[in-house]
Image (cartoon, rainbow, N blue to C red):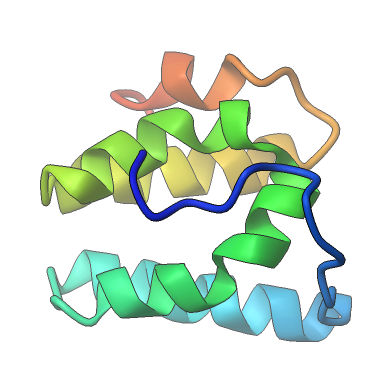
Length: 100
């Protein structure tokens, strides 16, 4: 998990819910098309995504992104969004292979 800021070390500017949804939708689109811009897109939104969902919940998604496994990252992102920010951190990893 190189180049990742430690959780809780700085103030994060949280976008409003509509902007969050739009950014996550765009990330899904990039993952669906295996667009290499997905890395830069995720890094740009990572501070607020980590603040909202927590690093533990994002671990499987970030591992998939680091290994360029965009299908697993897409499935994990969709599972995370379905579960919502208050879900168990383990939920997205459990659903990685089941969400289409």
